[in-house]
Image 1 (tube, rainbow, N blue to C red):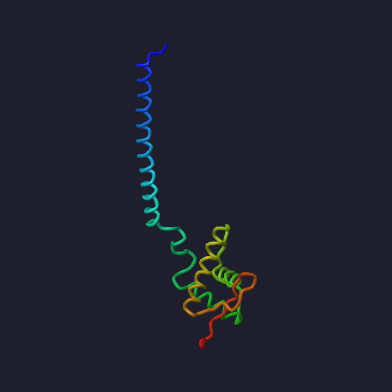
Image 2: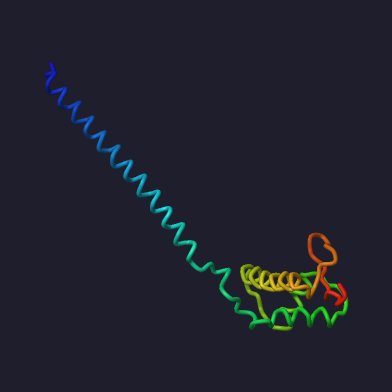
Length: 139
């Protein structure tokens, strides 16, 4: 038969280990939370690749090309048509889906900026794609 004193000692040691585990688990949870906060803070100051200046156009060039395309056709165009015409003028080969998305985003972003500056306007949407024209001076 097992000595009760011996059993008590073992149970006390077990409780002691459980308390230490709880203390370390609490410390681990706190450190994990602090680490996550630090990572979030770092991400605020990290440059997002999508915010890096595009490599397709010089400053103002994209806007000038969009206006050139709209003037050349002298009629409203779908944004996809404008993007394609600008790509052809610049003779840019888009070899991957990512490059195409980045290029389209750059041109569409310029068009959006131009709309905000009252240079061009969306006159309607066809199947979710904007139809753009140069904004008349009197508007």
